[in-house]
Image 1 (cartoon, helix red, strand yellow):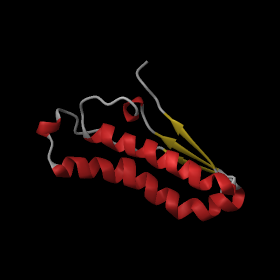
Image 2 (tube, rainbow, N blue to C red):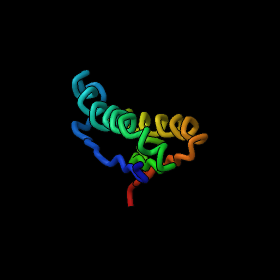
Image 3 (cartoon, rainbow, N blue to C red):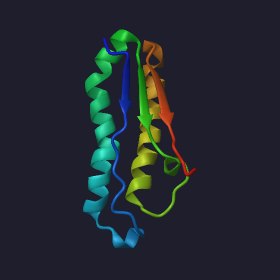
Length: 105
């Protein structure tokens, strides 16, 4: 089994007002920050369940309180929601799910 998984990959650029972005800007950020987390987690869930392990997802304060930079905030809100859902799903298997939300110091 696998005792721990830390999903920590992330990209933030481009950052700017939403009207400056195009759909590909959003897709690039979501591909890494959201779908990357989901894909790696899904691949490793059988091992995590076997070990009754833990998933730690790196999010951001911007996953709770949005600011400009559209795509980044959107992707981190997705990590928050995925983590909350996964926590409920994995509770019965003894797999813990945590979220780290770094902010501005």
